[in-house]
Length: 439
Image (cartoon, rainbow, N blue to C red; front, side):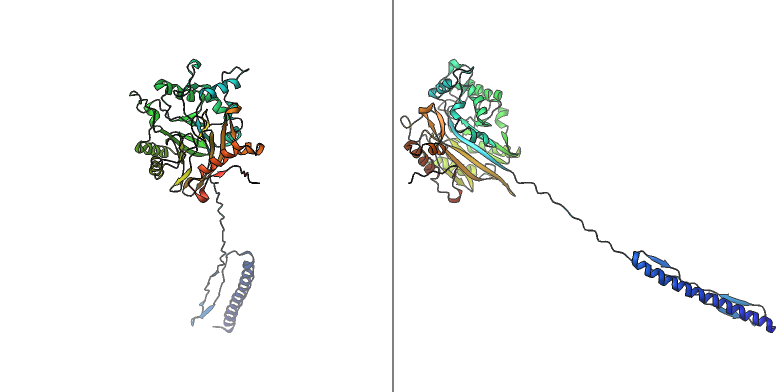
């Protein structure tokens, strides 16, 4: 090989090595630059690096020169972790509350009906009972569910009106009860058959026509097995009514389902149906006890214990005694043994001391995690002012105007003493007004 050709080959090899080294230096510089940039924008960067190794093989024969280039790729990855925080907003539905209101016996004796006729004079009405309730109408109408107890039949035939002992009151009373603020009435009583089956049917029809709820008279067998449920501020309140007696009048054979008596099993059966139909709270109105006796009988207590221990009966409200009886409790559930007379002609001269006394009972319902229950009982003592056109007085309010009235003071004290006879402590009924005759 000539010296000139050897020089040429040596030069060529040296030249290619220089070029390869420059490429390596350049790519290393680029890698450093891009790597510094990757820290700023947190993107993955892949940089090919060419590590060029030049192998020169010089053949011992004259004309062969081989150069081999090997490329190595290095990948650098930057991982960005993103944390996502999810906020869950829980909307709490307010617990439901409602006020139920109950009043005592409505007994439209003949003098009471005459008083309503006098109030209607000068109008196109034959009777107007509304003025007799003027002192208590605001409290009644403010309740979420107000339930009265009508103890007598009703009739459209004014020639057939009658008082004690076989009552028959004007049907217009139902319309007046609606205007006063009642939502429903219990109608099962010892006077329900005073006008026999026809009278009971006419009474039920009068309620239906007026649009006022009633529990106690079942015209058909289907009615007897159909739960009665009212709405009280979105709380579903079931209502059942039963009586101990029909004053010796036989239950019609053609309508054996007409009323519930105080037999336990049928009452529990209809309570179970009422709960299954969606009732949150179930009230049992019972016509029971002994007339003019303020202490509950053994039979009342035994029946209250048997019924309130059933999970589908939540409250008992009693009628019939015509005097105030106490508020008691069975397994933390209230039994209001007797609410006295709300409107009647009875007085101490015919019947018993306290026969003119009554009470408006307000039961406050609250919802908790385990259902709806009675939180407390509020009481407003009342009295029938026979000398003032049979107006129903709010005794507490009347005492504000007449603080020296012995009649009102005695009525107030007697009513509260009888209501609190069970000594319930923190669960005792709470008067809606306060009064003291002490100087």
